Image (tube, rainbow, N blue to C red; front, side):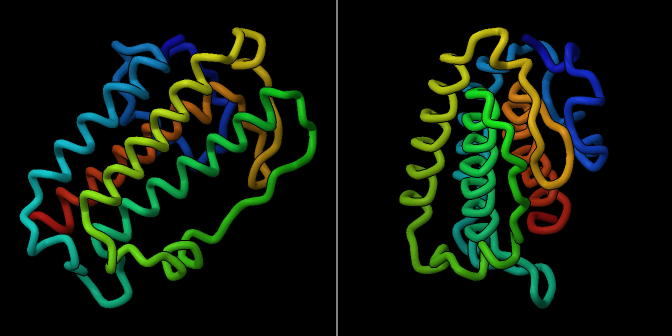
Length: 173
């Protein structure tokens, strides 16, 4: 299943800005696997003195953003699991700022954070590989919008690439 097979009715309108970040030459599970390696290599090439940098007052550091990517992946994967199991309960949104302010990312080593990212992605990858075609097409409600299981999988990687662009544009210039 590739990103080109998604319909714009399978995700919230605000996701339109994220999804162009997905490489349409890969299937969902291939992209989940490839993209995490690209992200880790990208992060490892960032100079160590930039990891605690904020480009403006109140903005997150690189370590905080990586933790945000991890937290968001866990939430999207949880939503995918619930919806894949035909759970019709509307799933709430989350306040990303509250999550980041309650991490201890700045006191963790980069290697520890990247290990957590890799393990979370491995878990997501195995879960998405386990879904049947029918489960991938299931839809539910999250953050007040209809979303499919497969769209959530693509959004995990699209969100990650969105933050890679932010790093390049605002942190590494």
